[in-house]
Image 1 (cartoon, rainbow, N blue to C red):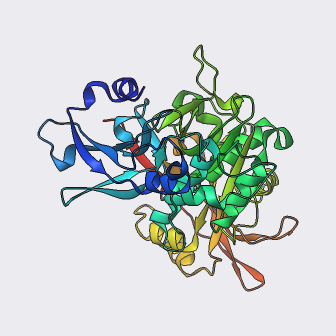
Image 2 (cartoon, helix red, strand yellow):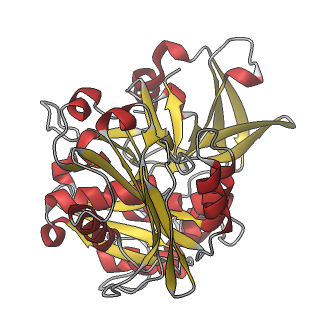
Length: 431
């Protein structure tokens, strides 16, 4: 299965495979200590690590990534750190990733990847692996989060109706509790409760915010990690009418699925194959930070109401792209925005903001196709669900308004479109 999968997904793009053996894998060792060491027929604690290169000369710039093969009677596929450029099926994708480094004979080989492993079926099932991927993504990216082995994740699992080891699977509340045990404040979204359009708009807003999610597919009895999306359907965008969300024009979500090598697509339209699609998603669990109170659905409703009331001088058709970002990242990125008006840049730089804000970029379809925005709204992410005045700032082509203490200050100045904010996701082009 391992060999067939590597052939299918990497094919002739892989020019060389270097075997490192024996290799002592952190995650496999944690599972061995927790479970396999107690078995009558023990597997080996040692693993083999495959180093994959696009060229036969083993040059560092042609490094595809590493893949651990473990001794298992069920599934020998272990942890992998693989460059998405060699695995995505579309020409480009917008993905979450963090720099992780494999060391080969003392040589560091860094890659921007999303953590992946296959479940071992005894200690870790798909939901454990989905939580493990998110926890380690944050652990490598932000100092306030800890990295965890899959064995540690299994030991953290809250007791349900059965035992922790061997695992019989996790329910939504156990997954939520696992994320909470690792410093997150989880939010569970249900497609049946929100309705399909708003459910997927919320999913895309959180992905656009740089937040990976555990996605539960009840019919398939499976869980995956959503960690990116595909490109805009430009034909659909050019035909847009009314008020639209950017997610309405994206036909792919990207996931890491422990049953397959990473960076698989979930497609909007159900195809002839047995591959999962948007229709299979029933719930998502969003690992929010502490001060991300206001949820996406409320923000969508508030922003749409503000536009429909004519508060901003923006006429339909227009595209709304709504996402969370930090105060620090927003101000850092606007300093590098070459097309942003100097007055607008000064006001935003000096604006007092909470740690996280909801940002709504509003653009005409032709502006959005050129990756520009013509209007923006900032909303306090710490606002309560029923708070009537969460607005911090907004502008259109004719001027801007911003909060100063308890007052909204008006400044009438013509403002030209400027570059979209692109900090949270990385554009990956297929190798």
